[in-house]
Figure 1 (cartoon, rainbow, N blue to C red):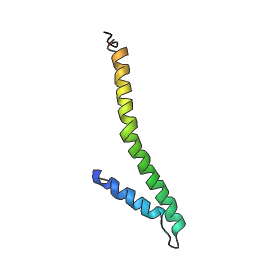
Figure 2 (figure 1 turned 135 degrees about the vertical axis):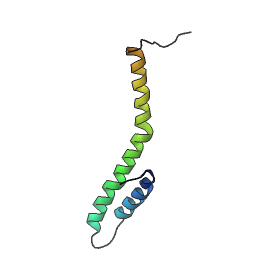
Figure 3 (figure 1 turned 30 degrees about the vertical axis):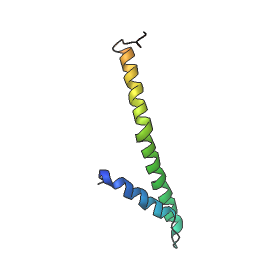
Figure 4 (figure 1 turned 120 degrees about the vertical axis):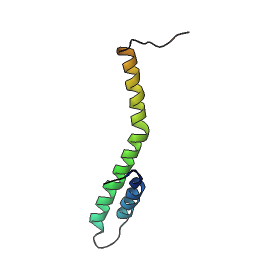
Amino acid sequence: MLYSDDGPSIVLRGFSFMVATEADAIARQSLGTVVFGGMLVATFLSLFVVPILYIAIGTIRDRLILGYTAKTD
C-alpha cells in the first residue's frame, strides 16, 4: 500500500534504477525509466492539468447550467 509520503522515495528509487551499472543493468534501467518518467508525468498532471480542468469545468457549468455570463462594466 502506498502512502502519501512514498512519492519522493519512489522517484529516487526509480532514478537509482535508471543509472544502474551492474550485470543486470538493462532490466533495471528499463524499469527505472518507466517509474521515474511515470512519476514525473503524474506530478505534472496533478500540479498543472487538474487545476486548469477544474477551472474550465466550473466555468462551463456556470455558463450552461446556472446561466451566468461574464460581468461587463
